[in-house]
Amino acid sequence: MKYFLLSLIGLLALLLIISLPSKSTVPQQEQPPLQLTYLADDFSVYLTPNQTISSPLTITGQARGSWFFEATAPVVLVDWDGLIIAQGYIQTTEDWMTTEFVPFEGTLEFEIPSYKNNGAIIFHNDNPSGLPEHDRAVEIPIFYESSSF
Image (cartoon, rainbow, N blue to C red; front, side, top):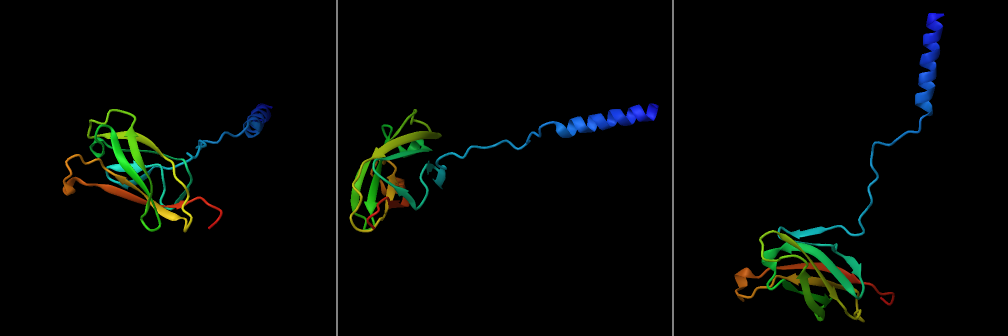
């Protein structure tokens, strides 16, 4: 009788464990809409090479404070032949007077080129000295969104 009760209790415990809803130990991760692309040791942006873009283009990322002067740095959008179709500035959203990474943002408005849909976005550091040894640039190939190509 003693073994029967122990067996019955064990069987009930086993059934209880089996009937409990299973909980996954692997947390579900949400995919961010854009991935931060590290393009240089001191500059990264939420654009991926060969990404399709449209106007207005909102640009966000982070760069070391040395990329900026007075909290801004120039950015240029070119077509397949290097013709500038838009230019503007990215601006820091925090204190830029640091050697650490600071977030930036900017917006470029442009017309889609009428010939070919490839081009590039070029980020330049702001170099108030004008000395070429202090120039830095990051170029990312892009595609323009258009149904006419």
